[in-house]
Image (tube, rainbow, N blue to C red):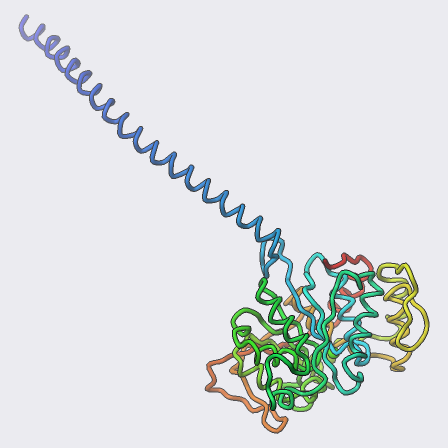
Length: 372
Ligand SMILES: [Ca+2]
């Protein structure tokens, strides 16, 4: 009995000692294993933190030097290609662009000449007038583009000397510097010329074009240079068409503003200029808003569509229109011909929210934030 009483105690002590020694060994091994894993883990955390810091540094550098599309500051870099002296929507679109500095970086203004606005100098002067009304004439550059049509300019092609070379070269240069959208609200000649000179442009930018009554024929920007439209389509550059569709509620023609709204909302809007700026139709102006009233008075209509504005509005809020991706069609003798088998797709915009777009236009000018 004694043996059996004492021996379990001895046995228990023996087992405890073994367990203790064994556990010391295991703990020791375990400590070493945990220690190695912890070191590895710490190093991984440190590496990942360093990588994160590196990425942040890179991001900061991008933000500092290269504001990219969808980058940290979410601003869109834009080249605005305009036939500024054609009636009045170009000027209003440019004013909207200049007023939305929280969203847009304006990299350059290029002008093209459509037939109602005179030659390229007139378009240059009108774009400059709007810049002056925003006190930005010393900070923004305007580049002269083509008077003629793409197919005529291309006939005797000399990449170092052609009608529109100044605008084409700046399109090439600016899109090489950083991701930059081309918003074109006139004929597409300057864009086509830039693509002709540098086909790689198709791989580094995107064109948003205000034009066409697609699927119907015969819109002003389109008919001013049919050859340029086809060249841009065939170049492969991402291409979005903000349709006009005169007489329909499904294009930018639907974004019509009433003269009463202009007279009510526009007086005094925009920055005040140091010196009065002479208007296109006479008069002197210190605010774009007052010049806007003059433009509407001289066009003499009760309502007028702000077509070109819409190409910028849908960049600000894509919900203000509907978009559809389609196989790229082609213009043949001025008619759109669908090509259902075409792998190349383009985007067609329509169905615009007139009230939201116009309200945002007025509010943008009331609370302007100048572009840089
Ligand atoms: Ca225009």
